[in-house]
Amino acid sequence: MEASEAEASQQLAALGSIVTLQSSGLALTLLPERGALACSLVHRPSGTELLRRPRALADLDAEPFTHGIPILFPAGRIAGAQCTVDGRVFRWPVNDSLGSNHLHGFLWSIPWQVREQTGHRVRLEPTAAGQAHASEGFGADFGASIVYQVDEHRMESRLTISNRSRVVIPFGAGYHTSVALTRPWLLRLPAGREWEMTRESLPTGRLLEQPVTLVGVDEGLSVPDLVSDTGYRPHDGVPNVARLWDPQSGVAVKMEGEFPLAQWVVYRPNLGAAFVSVEPVTWVHNAPNLPLDAHLTGNAVLKPGEARSLTYRWTITGGQ
Image (cartoon, rainbow, N blue to C red):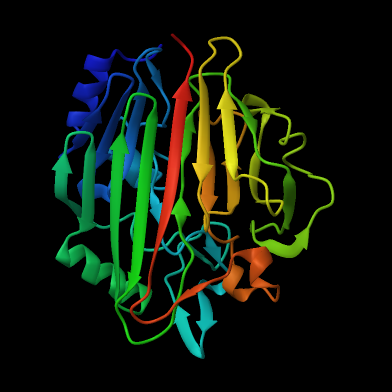
């Protein structure tokens, strides 16, 4: 049974400093000091917690990527924890239980702070110490900011990454969205193709003609029956929209990733997991190291002084 909104608020306050944005339909809670994590999104008309909400800070310490919506830069799994961009080698820490790879970058673990908050909108940036730590780990100076806002039925996030260094840097970012199985969700992704994956959940470079893991995902598959750690590339020209819906209650979530958020990762470790991660990303795992056209992988760079923004939008309906 889900906690009441008052009980949930008490649990969230115990996690530390929080920022809450509320409308008549939604309540969004952020943890600035824990990577600006969006840790809770409640659909108020139905009382549904849409995100896998941490109950205690120990939950985040144990599973930092699979609660709420961690911000990923660089996103995904990088083989050998290194890549070469414009003749420069970027070497990152090995932090992947599946192999000697780097996983998910440097923004999710540093402290952020509120720079501006008005009504239903807030803008956050890393603290000076947090940003310095992230840039040092990344291997070049970069900047980051994120804006969250809510209205009656919609939550929107806009992440901006800027290259503040004098070198070309890799650009791959995304949102590791972990949706709570508070409903028996069905999941639909746009028509597209699944990436074939290795045992370390790295793409082989082959796009499958027929899905092996996400069978029927373009029509709707049952999340409670799903086990997955795979990438998915929608066909060119298809709107990049994922949908979750519960036929019993009528609650439905439309998740839109605007370009360059053009690929998805779907992760659910086992049939007992009380969540599914549906992750819009700009590139597939290990994109900088794949000998494929960047149009397929999403591989990209930021030149010195260049910035790029990613807009991610949820629209929640039903359950009245």
